[in-house]
Structure formats: structure tokens, C-alpha cells
Image 1: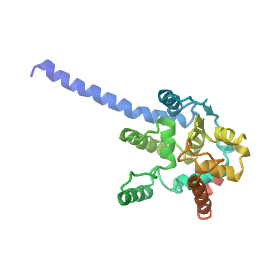
Image 2 (image 1 turned 90 degrees about the horizontal axis):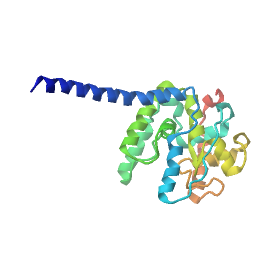
Image 3 (image 1 turned 90 degrees about the vertical axis):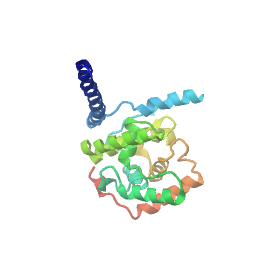
Image 4 (image 1 turned 60 degrees about the vertical axis):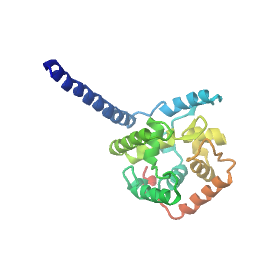
Length: 238
């Protein structure tokens, strides 16, 4: 092998390592940024109109209004935690108990593993990524989740979640959802409305909180039953 060839190989690997380092650092910078800056838009908000155009469907106007944590309805946060992540304040982004339970259920039924996403994981997906399932997205989601738990407080994660989570077709966050579904500001939502909005989170573009399907009605009832058994004292100190 010539000296030129031997010298080129280390340089090639050096550039690969630099590229890997850059790709690894970008998510850290993004997460650090949202610690202080309220995101004006997310990738998902940009992707939805593109998806609609390719599908030949009209794209509804985007509805997104940032709401400070102090103005996010307490009942909505409580019901969202009950419905989506009851151990939010006790884990570090990954609820291994729920993950193992979901895996066992998948083994018994032969279905795909579902239902183990924490609030932080859902927030990472909504804030930085896309919704379609793939191993690439899951890997990136885990990486963002790790850094969100390292760099952000639980309070900030909840604030981001309540503002960027998809809650209807073109509707993002609790303030926009309150206007889109009930024609009121978020702080004017009553308890039952907060409950219904939290219940639609797994399928926000398919379920209507004002006209619950039997499945959604059953989910609402289940959340109500769980409320008697679960308490989040951390919400009172927000």
C-alpha cells in the first residue's frame, strides 16, 4: 500500500467520526434550546400539510398558541398523566415496568408492542420528530428522551407537552384544542372537558371529545376510575 493510501484511510475515518459527533450533538443543542425558548413551530406541524397534499386532502389551518405553565389547566395535566404516564414523576423518561408489561402483552397476543410511551417520549416525538413508526424514529426518540430528562425539569417537560402535543387535525396544544373543540380559552375549560381532551391523546385526529365513540367513552370512564387511586402532589407545586 502506498503512503498516500495509508494516509487517506485515517483521514476518512476522522471525517466519519466528526460527522457522528456533530449528529450526536445536534439533539443536545435542540433540547438545551427549548429549556429557555418556547418553540415557535415543530417538524410535525410542517409535515402534516405535506402529508395532506400527497394524500390529496385539504390541509386545515394550523392552530397553535403557546400557553405558560401557570395557565395550563390543572385538571388537563392531571388527566393526561393518569391516561398516559402515571409514573411520570418517578421515572427518568423510560418506564421499564410499563415497557416490560407491554412486551409480555405483545408476546401473548402476537401484536406489536404498544402503550409504553411516557410523557417525555411523546413530547420528544411531538417536539423534534415525526409520528410514523420506524426503528430510526424510535432510536432518535430514545436519544432525545434521555437528554430531555437530563437537561429539562419535569415541569418544563409538562409545559412543552401541553403546548405541542397534537390534539386534532391541525390542532396543537391545550389552548388551541380548547378553541377548536369547545370555543373557549384553556383556562375556561371545565373538568369534564379537560377529561375528554386528555382521553383523545392516543388518537387526536380520529376521536372527537364532544362526540365520544364507545371506545372513547370507555376510556373516559377508565380515567375517571383511575383518578380515585392516583395523586400527583407535584402538580400543586408547579
